[in-house]
Length: 108
Image (cartoon, rainbow, N blue to C red; front, top):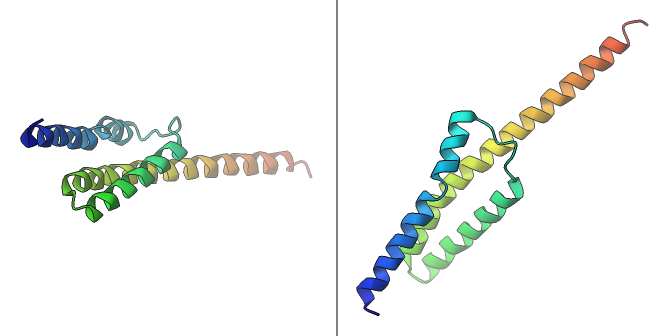
């Protein structure tokens, strides 16, 4: 196979790597809902992207690195939103439980 055709495959793969998370990021941005997303899956994706970026830098394959570094930015956004939303949900549950306890103790 011609070297330029191999590069085209790499460019297409990098482009797909960059855009594959855009629909998810957009949906999170629009709805601010992350309850159905698995934090573990996104942590694994983050580690994968980080390792591929490091590998690309060490092997001077900057096409691989650039795609994964951009992907890491999207993954950081998703992980931050998951952590923030889940923390807020847990905090609201804790507040509701405490308020119920207080209402139940009012008869004292």
